[in-house]
Image (cartoon, rainbow over all chains, first blue to last red; front, top):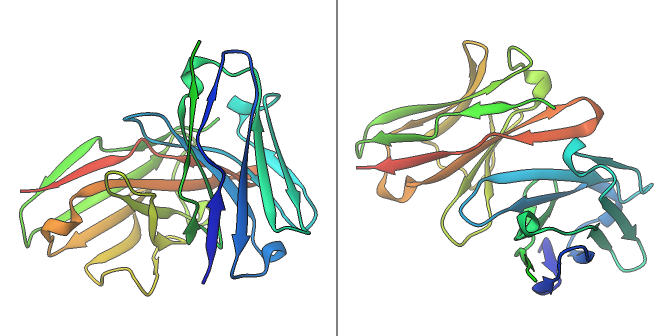
Length: 114
Length: 110
């Protein structure tokens, strides 16, 4: 079955970077774009960006331009989302989603705290 | 960046009908925004209910339907059930393959 499995929770200090992975299985990895979405505690969903696993092209939300990098490894069907210059407001659950939004990862809690 | 607006909260009686809407700060919402609707329950990842304005998945209960209404995307729930109590988010697509979520509507079935 289609499945997205994300890496585990992270605790980071302000100013650091975090890299979250999302491993896809059960479908042709290069056939479906991968989105990244985050949700701060008690808040709504926020679209961060998208990557085309086939060619690696990306498009990021204006808010994250310059701070986010999405990459992929086709050999392992894995997509990565790296967010730099972390601040407390980046504390959130980060989700990957693909297969035309029909499959979501389990979420990765990133906590930014000094 | 565009701002997508939803009603913060709505209440519907069991068996009743309610319409949630999704507007765009750039103007009328059209099929070209490929509106999606997601349902999220506490502690769970969102799941897709409606895609491309009005298309349903095999798991979408028949009581949910999507449309364009008065320049907005709309999600109508006809015959609300207690299990429909959840947060609902719309997503619109803009140029450059960028997506923007609405702020979400907390639906109470009471």
